[in-house]
Image: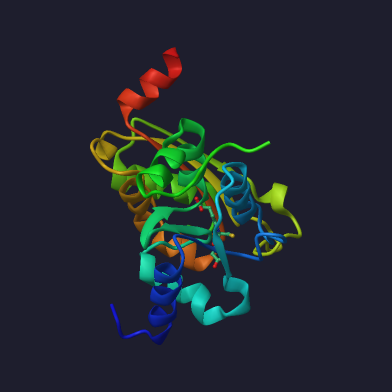
Length: 113
Length: 98
Ligand SMILES: N[C@@H](CCC(=O)N[C@@H](CS)C(=O)NCC(=O)O)C(=O)O
């Protein structure tokens, strides 16, 4: 599991911020509807997060799939733990579980606007 | 084999590996025409809704991994995007009555 050099970068990212989203594009300019949907959910809860654009680095794009054992982008990490992709985040957002999960980790999450 | 649509192939794979109580596979490719990952001929974007007893007691992540594992070859070959909704029969019943 540790033989891929890109894993080190991933470890640093998910260890460096409470909420990290591996996505296509940036939080301001998502380049895929699935990534945009997760950005929207997090933004709706006023959550501060770090976006990591996998389109800038093909090695990272493939590496994060191996790292998480998850074949698609986006991928959300909270406190170093994999939460899921767009479908899961959307379901958890709608049921209120996403907010609960963030709160349980001491992260501010309140519907804004 | 070559006559089988990708949607039919996905359905067959999921039937074989997860024995679903209910399964719906929708080819959404036309809605993504021209977007990244789309190819001439489509069959790149799919939506799967699957109700299976095998999901009982499993996290969302574990359930979706079962779906992805069953479709590993299809994802590698051609399928670019896959929207997945996984339910147990009990969850499905609750959803229908609420
Ligand atoms: N079911 C996925 C949908 C996301 C998805 O299908 N992503 C595709 C298209 S953006 C993907 O990452 N394909 C592999 C790739 O582009 O490297 C989720 O819940 O996140």
